[in-house]
Image 1 (cartoon, protein in one colour):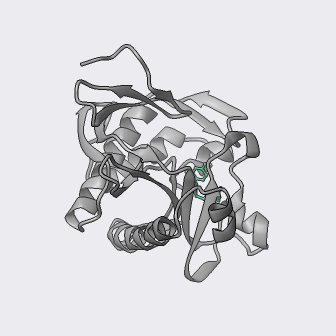
Image 2: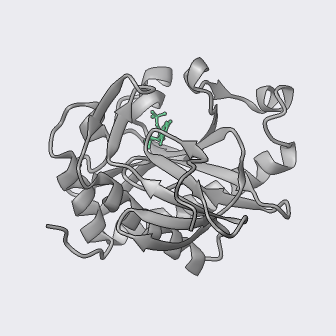
Length: 239
Ligand code: C5P
């Protein structure tokens, strides 16, 4: 397996080619970043936890017929995925007001939304990932209207699946971010990761934040929160 040439290095992951041109190897890093890379830290063990948590979520989605890029984990911190061309949009689904929604519309944090809210953001670090409406997406030709419609539909389906599942684990799914790609045959696939880096999870009873907000807001015990999520999803305990 070719391990030399990194194809892409993101804030939390690296992508490497494999002997199969349709398959990539993803390495989950321990780096934590927030606020478009302004805040950084190394959290030993985060990569492993996110690799395993993502695997569990992708396996759950397989059971529900959602098509995605995940193939299998090959070590504590590596997984194989189908190669896709990433659509440069981040799709956020919100059930409860938090984060940038609170700042944008002024609802108090924790407000239950009457129905899920889907937002699209342009993946562009230089611009700080701005919110995009359908006309902006068409103007910049970031995705076809058909793809936008499918991304919205799949994201809402993922929301239903995850919300129900997490409810049984005593967790509220506050919001999350998805990314999509197109494979060589033109199929739209869910890609990237699903982890406490990309979702907000609150304990159902105490409201305790069990996600990257612990890092963003300096709440402490970041890794312990990720570990707690992993264990609630049925993962084994890590020393
Ligand atoms: O910051 P904001 O409230 O818009 O984030 C909404 C959701 O999307 C959160 O769960 C956050 O972790 C996730 N997100 C992400 N990557 C980004 C921006 C947001 O995973 N670049």
